[in-house]
Length: 423
Image (cartoon, rainbow, N blue to C red; front, side):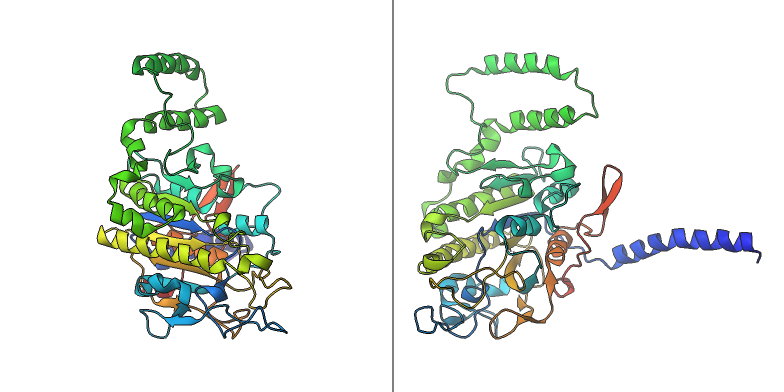
């Protein structure tokens, strides 16, 4: 073979090699059958040793303070897996769950950066605004019904939850009040349908001048969807009084009602729902349990326990649990040692997140940490790995490349699904 033929052959082989590698990756990528995801966000940083990864009993009031869990450990429905005592209801349903105890990131333990990383799977970039996992799912799967949006947020909006370079079409519709529904969707009282239609006709005259490939066109599409959803059919989903009183009571507090609403939104065809649980009034600080926040942390954990257990049981009762993945997110964990005020600091090197339902092969708990929950001993799971597991459960290839201004951007930053959950 002469030099020219050799170079041609080598170049062709090099060009073909990535496609072979990608094909191999896709062929071995697990693909779940979940249709929806409810992403519960515990803003502030849930303490893993006080919830889903209990360790030796500590004492924040002794002198010196003793590092460890602040509560007693209890057995769950899965032999050998324990939670803390304030998760007693969820413990009975642990066979429908997997606590991923070895999630980790090396981001500075600061709330905004860590919140962004757990939502997007990537560090903030100066040139790219990365989409949240909710927007990625909305982009890849769309809504499950023409009468529902793909992505809804029950909580306060911010850029970490947004669509990034995917554009407004794949953003969220949000609400902060379960009684009134999405902001701006309720029509003013006394405004007749004929008047609304005339206003819409006037708006349409201006919209015809918008170029199809412009940013304004994307916003116009979002506006049209909002107008369609503002009708009584979709808005009826926010009337929780249609649910039996006993079921509403089983879900518990305002956070529980948010979880109940998320089940109704799944039934309506919403693909991805984020439910925020950073309700500071429960213990004074939410999940950011520095100092005195630790004193009433048990009330916050009990609130989570009641709502999460009710959601799992309700979805299962309605034959929706295998179709609906429940994912629990928080920006980092907390060390087993106590600070000067008896609370806990921040810890990103090892913390717990949870997956439930979604048709996964659950095992109660995955991964092992050391005696104080600080170091990972077995099966580390990066944030991109956790995202990849969610995507794969929803039938999305986490290695698929999207594009921002012509540049390829994989859906996850090298994340690999937890194979154990798909076997």
